[in-house]
Image (cartoon, rainbow, N blue to C red; front, top):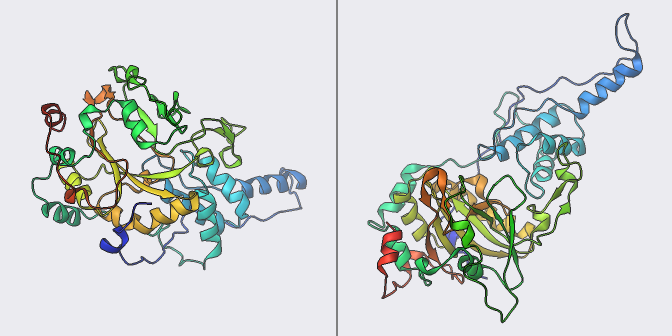
Length: 380
């Protein structure tokens, strides 16, 4: 497993005190067995009260990528203050979420909220968080002046310009592993790419049909390998998915190998030198076909719990530098390099590829002696 020195060299901020907000909490439900004239019968009144208790008035869930994880914690506090049973809270929050929650994301939030002491009334309902500090990111970037996409590519052990989309995946995944590829990020995956068995050579052109400029939002892949089969997960049961079927959930993941870093807050000219100085085993860096730069960190976790522990040990420091906390999911979609993002009229470009990173910062790695003109061009 690549060594992870990040927590030591870039320590996270001190823990912030938990805060919450009881605004919007429902009053305690009371069952009335005496029905005044014109009121529902006692039985129907009880049924109505029970329905309200099992469907608490939750705060509005934001769109995916706009703070759903924070909302989950807020919703858990609303359920607790409303006297809702924890199991019912998990179901209600999952159903109200605007995206598929991560593995045990809701369960962990509910357990944390229901298991801790009551928070002061009137405080904000917000998960303790570290704020992005642009001064810190800029200061770190200033320590590596002039380090741009070309400098990043020059330190890539594998020449980025020589990799097709299939070549890219074949370098990062093991024989027999499957990767979901998407032309629509709301689907369950349009293709299941499989790396050939040991001793067989993959077809470099296998995914070249995705390179044509016809996909408005570009092409994505799920960062960790999956079985490729649908599984039925109770926490994913919703009106539009009554069986909870999915093949892009954590239960379908076969190896918790990668953690995705991306930032929409930091411009590329700052984010690239920041990434280059992180003492993390970064396996790949590529553009989104938009303003952000994505990086895959190889953590080789033994399971989902280990993956979350490793993520949590470094996430505060990364968020402080500008990383998107919502992107740090084991089943996060990311951009497939070598494909075209039509809506932005830009390529999703591979800048750096090192399938066996050792944890040394990219900036400290050896510069390749031969840099092609094509590499220089795509890095500009």
